[in-house]
Image (cartoon, rainbow, N blue to C red; front, side, top):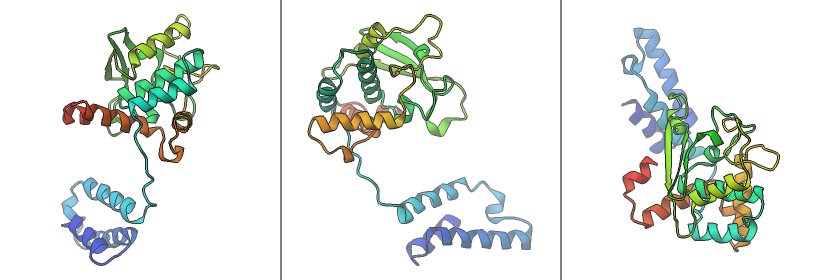
Length: 247
């Protein structure tokens, strides 16, 4: 009923989301003073809070920026133009982009935010298998399950892709840019020439360089374009939607 009340204020009476939330808060405070019990008999109102956040984004937030997916064909074409596999930096970039697309990774999951943290960000030591048949590594849970500690989620990517092949790109990366003995845990899975990890901003910039090289508008692409494109390619290839949602 409380959710319906707030939604009705916003949808039917055109009241701002923050104002409607304020009305609810004031009424709840009055009820608590009068009866000693808050609305909903003290039940958890997390769903109500999440609904309000969603409505605020929908009603009061800026227009949603268009973000297009990058197809495997486009990624391969752009990589070959901008990042041919002839330097250590380029093979790290190619491995990162293909892994992000085939693993449906967010930019924050493929790269880091600020400085590298081996407890949060994927490292060379998280790679469990790197062969022509498959690439397997462990990473942290999705952002809505961060209460689960440690890198407990296995990501398995099969080798032999027609346009992109993360398993092959990672193997080439490890050959051309080997990890110093005993430093796999503290070495970013994908790294720059100075040894630092790529950030989300770096990935966004790299993606935009690639799409510019193939004649697309860079403003319509970003780090998330790899995740969008990977999911779209999986669906087009006939993958079960439940498997895509799980990834």
